Image 1 (cartoon, helix red, strand yellow):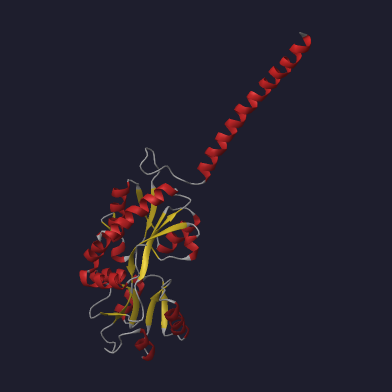
Image 2 (image 1 turned 120 degrees about the horizontal axis):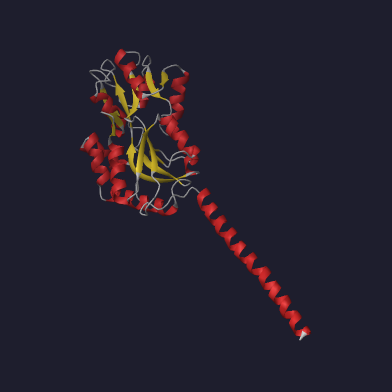
Length: 296
């Protein structure tokens, strides 16, 4: 009896020691899983109750986005509200200067960046989804000779002063030629397009390189002055614009949801029709026809 009972007591003691350890292990495992999910930054899925809103920075981008009577309006807010309606995600708009919006997105303070060109730096933190295009045009004062109809013609015409905004990109070939004009003091940088418009109006510069998305509203608001003419730069092609979804803010399920609905909006022609409403059917038909494919 004594011999038989001793092993049983040993087994019982061992069992009582193991069970509390198992409960503790399960609790620790659960806590670690919850902590990992929290630190990942993955929000609750958009369609679930209590899902976190996605913060979007919008900047003054011509008809792309602007403030009117205390409201943020324009092509991008229209597109994002439709995306919000289709996906069920809640998007919160915040006005930011463009440079600050990009910086805050890269730092992880924002969930969504709009009107973005795809770059390696942004790819490290976000998922890129294309929706449309931008294209650089040549904006000329009326006293510029009519033969100035290309970047090459600008280079040949000595005495013309050209304005460009910081951060403008014209592609690898033209970027180098623009840098040369800047070095030769034939071109000058400005902080934003409103300053460039003011310089054109006052005659401080003769020409400027401005995206069509921007100069359309500058012209409509009278900021460019009278007698301005617009020339398509034959050396540049439309560049793809998209939204970036920050992986640290938006979980994989919601990113897939937003991607599917935005691609549906492109596939249906919804985005192109929206562009045409703001910039004119002929211009947008040309830009979308010449741009790189937006859908995989």
